Length: 288
Image 1 (tube, helix red, strand yellow):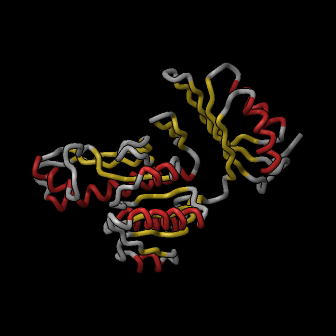
Image 2: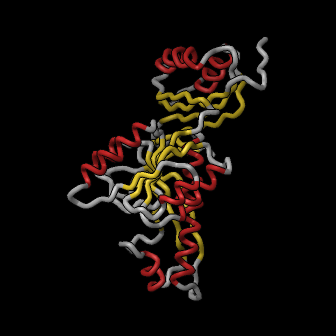
């Protein structure tokens, strides 16, 4: 009988496939046969699409990661599975993009250094110089890449070069106020998260909270979603709202909105970095 030790490496297995009977039994049996111990498991059957989703965290000291990956290929083929295996202890290499509003950036950096996020911030890219000192205080390389309409293709090519050189598995748009081109969106598909104000759908432009105050809104909020070529229409990971009333000033709404944006983005980054988010077409399955 195999006994797991405290030093047995932990893995996270994510999978999706057409739903059928026996999937959970088969996954559990596959892991049992390899001496693995399941530490956490979650599943979801989407009756609308007929798809099955599962996330399993397990410890296994009898097989190497390479061996597990190879054996999982044959297992997945029998079920038509889309399957990923991740080393649980490996923090996710991350690049953050930001413009002139730093509340989300500052929050992410603090949570990262406090050990609250399983990420490794490899670089910060900005079209402004405002946060180079903040980046330096966390010992993170800061890349100032100013952008104009004429230079956008060259700047985006440099951004992608930095992202790939750092091996980034996650790109966070922490209030980065530039619209990504369709090509860059495709290159970052499934690994770029954006944050923006929500529940203010009629208020477009740079000062949505001024417009919200003028209209007397009673709810403000934020949405974190994956980046797609369709502006602000990617699969949603997390949302939240805060109440507002007639006594709130523009400054009150802005401050509350920034807090909400920071918290929503942090939760989305946390869940993504822990491999808890699975894509389900235009939606997501989030195993919190």
